[in-house]
Length: 321
Image (cartoon, rainbow, N blue to C red; front, side, top):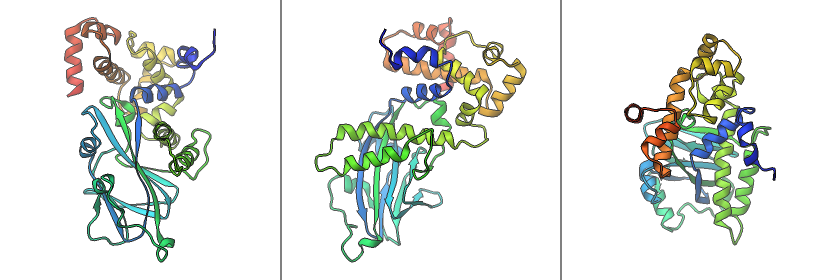
């Protein structure tokens, strides 16, 4: 038999908690698009609309969550979310706006920020640097990630509204700086290949999330739970077979721990009980199957562990409200 990663899928799900991250990333059907790759001389400002307006602007369907990101290649920017405090982003750093709020990118005092729609429509860059102010310019790369199936997604719900990460620090867990450098080189090609850039943006999103996983603090969150050897293994078991007859006792046996100690540890790590997590993940899987497959409701209910279709439908409606 030819050895591929597909052949390993069944066994590695039980051996490596990072496969739970891969599983969730796969469900999100990530894609990406570059919007801006330019230099700006201060004072300048660009206004980015909220996620819903970006969705319409980029002609995406209602089930797609559009997430803006900004990477500072040189200089610095100030990003100010609507109704929030400004944040300084230095060279080698990026911010990803998972919360979807409208925000302004700027440098220096500017009376009115230019709507990004103007730039995307092919308008000239009014902040183009010249020889006199070249030394003070900021080089900026902006784009969007398109995410699907974010409803009841434990990874997405655990993300901060504005994720600030640095690509300057080396890591064994991710290669964020390498992917960004690759994107930058490809974007500067005279005959750039949009297909390659779009695939690299998918990788960029994954590397950003792996960087966040590495930095997860000791607080209740999905990322912190995934790093816990006990809780992470339980998450992996649930994701591998969401339709199994899971119980606290059976999950505790899977991680070799008493049910009471396991339940307490899981709740501290994720902020919810093991069975509440099982239910949410089952509903996430069911939602994807309803959208993407031709299976009937009864078959989907059975796949995620429910024999009673009416009970499943009521639970699905409750969780999705």
